[in-house]
Length: 217
Image (cartoon, rainbow, N blue to C red; front, side, top):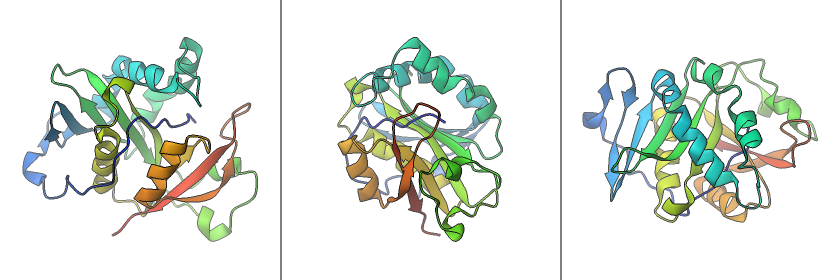
């Protein structure tokens, strides 16, 4: 399970509501919302898999900086070792930001957690049974959220998050975030996330906050 990076600061908006007329369904499910030079599109797993190189480049740049320091080739390989299988998961969905040259500048993606997910087992203290209950549709796991550093402070991360969370039909969203990533923590809490506990996502990982967002339905 990869960590998440924060690379933009803005308040959550509802700019993507009411844009059904812009939705295109060909090889990918696409919803576009343009602001300035960036377009955000919703993509299914097949279309997202074709962007692997661009997504890796975003990861390498976004996670190279403190507090992560994880932009090296080994870090990128670790983060993407299950990427292809993830894109084949039922319900996989990505929001990807493109510049005018169609270069990937930001990403957010995930899929519904299985009833047997071990994500809750990574907590250092057990969560209540009702909180950790999963049925295969209850929770959308947000595995990555990152924007290239040169595209920060334009609200792109907020647009990615908004597009994705408004498109899913799950009850809630769950993610991991480093507690020392102050901008990320502030944004997640502003969006409505609450901390469900401290987790060690993989062997040797730094402590993360396991964050949960209840979606209005």
